[in-house]
Length: 250
Image (cartoon, rainbow, N blue to C red; front, side):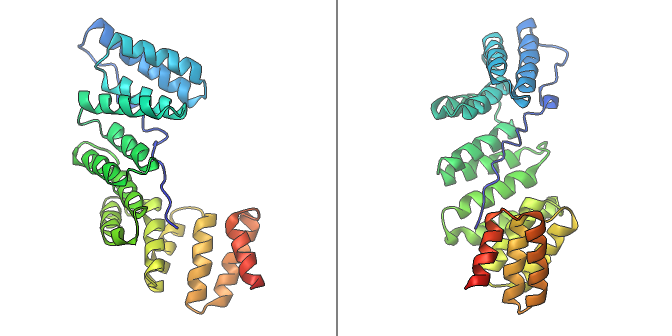
């Protein structure tokens, strides 16, 4: 049930994180410019040019945390796990406060099944008081450790509550809390989190299917049918709608 939103933030390699400031050597400034260019090419899908610019950035400043971070993300896109991990570690070695790199490295480790290592990266990202999106890292840590098993549920809930204390409308935290409460058979709290999720954005196939199941568990078949109609209208080819049809045929 739980899903990792792989927080390549797509990629929180925001250009704003690579501002070319006063000071620094000529090569360091040139490296930052090439990192910006590489990120731009990456987002436009021109991976060959992104690779060229980021290699140049690393040549110009081999100790640039941002250049290693961006290159790690690119190597992940190329599915080169060894290079991805190497450059993430280099990024963090050169700047232990690079929270975006820590969070993205955590996502990489989680996708590789290294859940406890991933959790440490997410929590290390949060330690930086200047990190702009700690709710993302808390949610990522929660979803990741849940992949280890239900014995991690209490800790995951604690992380999600921290995420929502920071960003009360953060939808990934809301939907994951709803799923946990449903697993724990608390239909009232499930509905509370689902209602909050729907109040701040469009319903998803995931939220609609969970709403259907929760309303049925509460004995509200008419309300469940309303959600099912929305699911049919908006996501007729989804797995969730297929699940609803299968339920109808049982």
